[in-house]
Image (cartoon, rainbow over all chains, first blue to last red; front, side, top):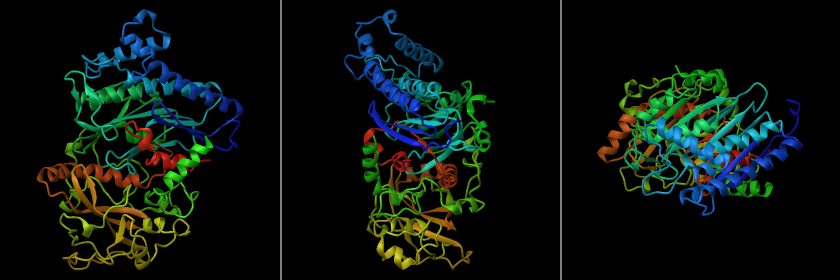
Length: 266
Length: 254
């Protein structure tokens, strides 16, 4: 907290086809350097793990040019995440779908942004918010004594909110159909998941929040309770009939402005 | 990167007047963008408590939420703000607005003042009906004080409302469920109620709207008054970002 007087800084870069916004409240030369490294890391992730880049490790694995044993430590982490969430979601989340290329997108973004945040932390950044196309990671406080306020976008109107989450160190990830259509497939049927229009998971880290929100969305209506039951996770969902479902602990989290990292679902 | 931010600011400038978060921003400058709420927020009406998520929705049991009155129950999507200018109600081929019995004539919204080329500070008294409706044709909100041509007069007898309350009629907004038009009640600058005055003619859509309304309606009401630092949503593309709330927040810069 030695840089309280430093002017906040915002950076936006387009990486992985996403706008990535960084809001730094305690910038310093070391943190600036880390911010460059964090953005470089995200560009690396795009090159190495995108299923849309022919030469990526993901595509090479898919074509059999790499075996799982030869995978880099980072790819091995991604594979582990995919396997875990496929198992935990009862097969609704699948990175390996019949007739389709291996697609770990459901877990890679949150994992990559979480790691970018760790690069910033290790350089001494204590108060920042990183938003990668709607997936959010926060650290510390934007101003002394105040939690970060993360709005959850209204599923129909892009300029409206349907909830606001207050948190310090935490993560918020939302899956929905309103930006890219019904693109999340239920791995059990191969059909697009349509029960929900928006599902948000609040967790202590973005790796968990992103993977859990994607998997829960693929599960459909049952995914709400599933996400709620995940350790350390809270859920806020809007179903296809525009009913809102949320974890009991969510209001507590909000009014207290506490981090979600210590909150366990009842 | 500063150049990129500047480009975003310019792109977003046209959108800013339509965002309810910036009631004081001037359409004539790029820099008059503030993410903070109007000062009145702190003194908002009872319907907008400090908690950010509505307390009405029972966790995990949304279907059991209490039913609301018919007037309110079919408004899942308060559409009093819009990302793009919309046709005025009378231009829509669907049924025109059906005035609510309880909707008294009123003065325009503070949002009108936000869009007009005005340098009023946040929290100034809303401009006069004539000034705002006459000079701001592209704004999503119009005053009910001067009903659009072809609109029937309110059917009910006038209802006495506190003088600080204002009712504002929104433009027709097309949604996946059909066209909606809403009436918004302001108490000071805080939104205290939203009522649907036009609903989709399609019966299926109506059913969806009726089942959906009570809860999302409340959530939006209470979230509207919150100042936020960032927005979580379904993965947004770089193209859609230019028109997003997050872009507006980023454009405030530091």
